[in-house]
Amino acid sequence: MVVVGAGPAGLEAARVLALRGHAVTVLERAAEPGGQVLMSRLVPGREELAGLAAYLVDAAERAGATIRLGVDATVDVVLAGAPDAVVVATGARPGVPPIAGIMDSPAVDPFDVLRRSAGLVRRALVIGGGLLGVGVAHVLAERGADVVVAEPGGELAGELGLRPRWQYVANLRARPNVSIRLGTTVEELSADGAVLRKLGEVERLGGLDLVVPTRPMLAVSGLADALKALPGGPAVFEIGDCVMPRTAFEAMQDAAALGHRL
Ligand SMILES: Cc1cc2nc3c(=O)[nH]c(=O)nc-3n(C[C@H](O)[C@H](O)[C@H](O)COP(=O)(O)OP(=O)(O)OC[C@H]3O[C@@H](n4cnc5c(N)ncnc54)[C@H](O)[C@@H]3O)c2cc1C
Image (cartoon, rainbow, N blue to C red; front, side, top):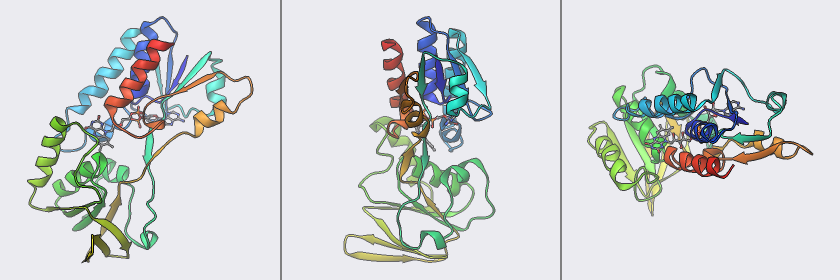
């Protein structure tokens, strides 16, 4: 079996499939396994997630799976292994929201903000207060920026259960250089400003040197679609964020359920 992607979904699938006697090879594009967990561990207060990635790798390898890093799994690369089945766990990536003026604004990819320490940021707007938005806000605030988080819903990090969410959000609220706007949408962006709306009220932000849109998250489904379109190709199964962007916990649940079925 070939598993594409060494995030939580791919690694957990590899572990269960190998324990059940399948010969499993995991193909991962990055130089390090872990998927988005490699980014979530960079968020202050979430460092323990590094342990999750290390555990998943160790457990998959102990079960007998082989993990190949630095391999971009195209259709040809996958078929070269002549697999009976392919488990696609290619995860999710941030998309660009359809906000007027976004192309003229200092908008950057949230994964880049987490991975690289960009130059000096004085004032940043984080669009979306989900798991990723809260993580980005923590990182920027830690680097000294004044951060505004605009979330259209009524709560932050709503993807998480109540207990893990509480600490993650309480720590953000406690930061003096972070202000949170719930029930608030971003209507328009410009070279250094934004127009926010909360019900009938409009707020204009100026002096922004960074805008970080953290929604939508897009499922990375191109490889699975291409494999499924092949006549007479191997069986293809999709798990984790490439089905629908959610959490590491749900990605691993998908993986374990599939692994026990095959
Ligand atoms: C900042 C942040 C904080 C988070 N906090 C939490 C949290 O507290 N709790 C929680 O449960 N979840 C959290 N999450 C979400 C969680 O990390 C994701 O839901 C989870 O990682 C999804 O797992 P996955 O395996 O489906 O995909 P991913 O983790 O995205 O892994 C997909 C892997 O596939 C690889 N890949 C893609 N295409 C190819 C290809 N063609 N060839 C080879 N490799 C490929 C990618 O390089 C990647 O390593 C957080 C995410 C972020 C970004």
